[in-house]
Length: 269
Ligand code: AMP
Image (cartoon, rainbow, N blue to C red; front, side, top):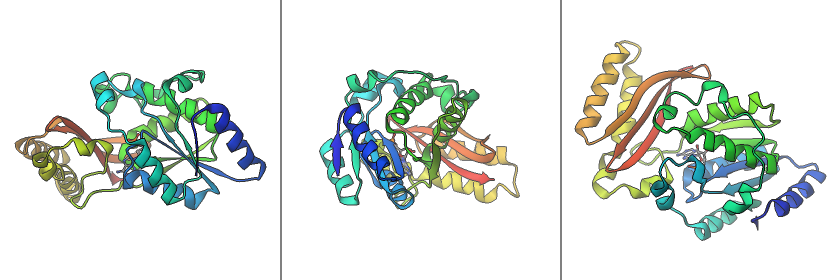
């Protein structure tokens, strides 16, 4: 695996792949890699000739600088993991390097960025669109891979790429979960032992709503799940059903012991 830190090095390596007629799969991440990230990398390897991963902790998508500062990082371990899994190229840019890439798109996402996370994390999706737009510009992949765990992020980026006519296919990869259903996330290491014991309850309540949704009033189910989660110590931002990109999904965001968890599952397509 090659590791590059500058756009010019990245361009020259990717140009050489393209000259050989290779398809390029791209997986943008913020690092501190877990099996969820690695399933994106494996899918990219299956679908494309070459796999490129970026690791960049993007300041502009964080709402609080303390959250950005304390975001877990272990670039050496990430590099080893990617090498072992057979990633071809790692792009590890500095903030200065990314800031030099022009912002040249419309960042409206046709309004998909306004609800759910958009209500609670003002400016978050603009930051995501800015960095992913820049990364797509410098990588120009055949397919870019995103996790279903952040389904709204995928929907925002799809709308962003469509609106700006960015020539890339976006692929969605299923959510990887821990033994108790907790969606894997780099932030999970911040859960203390007590919080970790109850964290799987979020997914359990989501699945319980899904199981009963056909025969019971969904708003009652959602209410009783919210009450149950609050009893277990969750502070809920939202736990609601919404339609995004034609899918009816149950979206959840809740904090537990100061760690904000997000998740979603398909209720109906
Ligand atoms: P992040 O490093 O959190 O920005 O995530 C990078 C990519 O990995 C995004 O497309 C996420 O949706 C995806 N991802 C994060 N966690 C998971 C997971 N548990 N399962 C599948 N994909 C994930």
